[in-house]
Amino acid sequence: MVFTLHKRIITAAIAGLLLAASVLLAAQGNNQGKSNPKDGEPFKLSVRTNLVLVPVIVTDKHGNHVQGLKAEDFEIKENGSSQKIVRFEELSSDVSKVDRPVVAANGFSNELTADHPKKLEIIALDHVNTPFAGGADANRGIVNFLAKNTDTNTLLALVSIEHNGVHIIHNFTSDPAVLSAAVRKVQVSLTSKDTRTANIAGDTSEADAEAAQLLAFFTDAGIGSGSASELAAAARAANAQARARVDASRQSQDALITLECLQQLAQYFSGVPGRKSLIWASAAFPFSLGSTPGEASRGTTNEDWQRTFRMLQDANVAVYPVDVTGLVQGGPANTIQTLNSGAIRAQGGDGGVGVRGAGLESVANGSLLDPTEGRHQTMRTVADMTGGQPFYNSNDAADLFRRAGDDCAQYYQIAYYTSSSGKAGWRKLAVKVRHPDVKVRSRSGFYYSSPEANPELTQRADELMALSSDLSFPSLPIRGQWRQMVPAGEKRKAQFVLSIPAGVPMVDSEHDRHISIDFRIIATNSAGETIGNIGQRLEANLPPDDAKTIQTKGLDYANELTLPPGQYKVHFVVRDNLRGTFGSVVVPLKVE
Image (cartoon, rainbow, N blue to C red; front, top):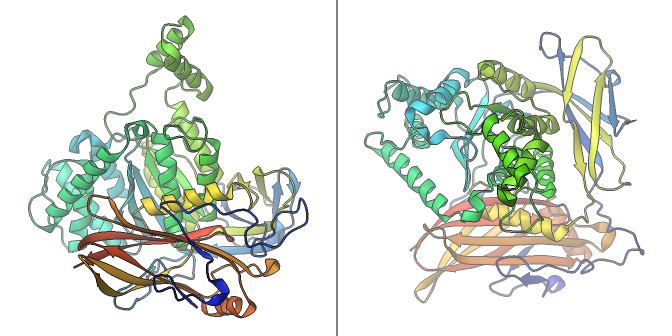
């Protein structure tokens, strides 16, 4: 079934139900296109279940993983009440390559080809909260950290967390040996204080490119000539330009930016099956809550934390925070003396509201007594709620990588049904194993929310995150193809079709075969300016034949972007509002 908007060829069954929108999709009424439920009865979605999946790590007293356990060896409690285990698996992962499907000419896709759990470690260098800008000398420690601990027997991804989002340095679809070679190049360069990359046997152009990006991350020095040098210069220029565009009020909200980047990472890696280990190399930030959602200049709110943890848990990502302040120079300047001085000024009343607030917050988060306590508390919280482990001592680097790799290589997964009654919020989990001398680790709980909780706010947040990120999100698979370029005066009409595979679009058979899907497309030029945009929603109660066609053959969506000649980056975002899932793909486009 193809919905072709620009030619107005739309099947009679859904004519008029695709509504144009501006930059943000127009909010729809809660009862539009739905059957009338009984008074007080929530809108029931047949696709949703209350199945809770809990990955569990079991180790002996030496830290080795315990294998061969059965379902009857486990007990799981939610908020103190025992739950019936309805599914139990002992999972082991492999390191076979994750591929992307072959697409036709002018085609694109966000899909991944992987059916078996993968042993994947994600190393995130946090440029937002950590002073990596100190030059080569200051960053030699973190490069040595990477050089000693990158494991070619593990799928690896190396990313940087920036003020303008997540940047991929080494992708998990590439050979881990490429990253190892690139890190060795950078290590030799920084150790010799020579900014030219060293020649290492077995190197490839891919290693040169990744080494160039790492050098661009750690130092502003040039790295010689050639394509690697151009890549580094382009990376530095892009970072500088992006930071210049960041609003001043947002620059102070590093914690909020960090949470948004963790959300992007969760969405990007959600398509890789299995439990993933995210090593968050950071100085972190003290936990704090700002004002209300939607304000331009705010700190993190409870809703931001809930959204972040929910995405990490849904993507099966466990976070292993590692404090790297011992590896870089120029760490956080707060000291016990300066914090005490702030508290004293607050008590004396000569420091203003801001100082008094900072003093009270330092008391609340523990940093008044220990300047690192607030940051470490955040690390502990993130690790505990996702099933990872925090590491404060840089001497534990080798153990960190070993544990993170082992944890995603072998684990148990248990499942149970949670109750849909009771209010939304945090539900505490406790897992026990009926064996002596074992240690058990799992996420400490999960956030439960009703499907009807803030649906419009969630939709906007999902779509804006996808439209502002250069990463493609595969949770909802998208296939696409550019068709033809049609002259339109001095501009061109770039025609395309998007396809959602069969079985993916949600058709709610319990409510008149209801469907609700958002399509958002923007095209930006090299300066980041939006030149073309499309925002439309399919909201309909489908006839039986159309519903069957979508369920068996999928859904196609055709449209066109009218653009002047130039180079563009096009973001395609599709959100299934009934499932609450969304996917995106970012595609370059040249208009001649």
